[in-house]
Length: 239
Image (cartoon, rainbow, N blue to C red):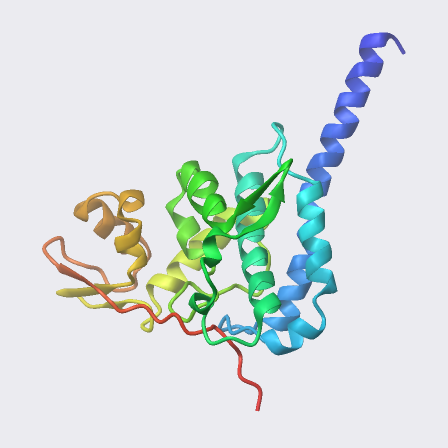
C-alpha cells in the first residue's frame, strides 16, 4: 500500500470510529433515563443520587468525544441536547434534595461541562450552540428540571432518529394541557414561546408552527397569552 493509501486508511479509520462512537456514546444515558425517568417525565432523583456513577461516566465520555467536522448537524444536535439534559440532572443530583433548580445560585451560569479545553455552562450550550443551529424544536427537547419545562424523555436522543424524536417531543409538549391551553379562539402558551420568540418568528409564523403540531387548529386572529411557569422540581414522588 502506497503512502496515499495508508493516509486514506488512517483518516477513514479515525473518522469511522468517531462516527461509530457518536452513535453508541449515548447508550449509557439511554439506559439511565429508562431506569430513573417515567413516561410522564418525572425523575426519581432520590434513587438516582444513590447510583450516579454511570451518569458521571457518561459525561466524561461526552467530554472525551467532542464533535468533529465530519459529524452531521443531527450528530451535533443529539450530542448537545443529551449533554444539556445530563448536565442538568447531575446539577440537581449534586444538590439534592431541593425544591427547585432556582433554589441554586445562578444554575445556568455554572461551568459544569468541558468542551475540548474549555469549561462551559448550560447557558452556553443552549444559547451559543443549540440556538445557533437554527432548530426551534430544541426548546422542547432540553429540560430544566422543572414542571413547566418540556418533559425529560426517558430515552436518549440519537442522530439516526432525531427528526422523529424532535417532532414527537414538540407535539407532546404543545398538546399537553398542563403546558399550553389551546382552543380555536384563545391561545394560552408556555412562556417558552415568549422567552424565545425570535426563534419562532412573528405571530403568523408562531401560529403556523403551533398549528403544525396542535390537534386543535388555531385561527390567525387568535389572541395569544402566556401562562405562569412552574419551577418546582420535576420529581417523581415515591410513596
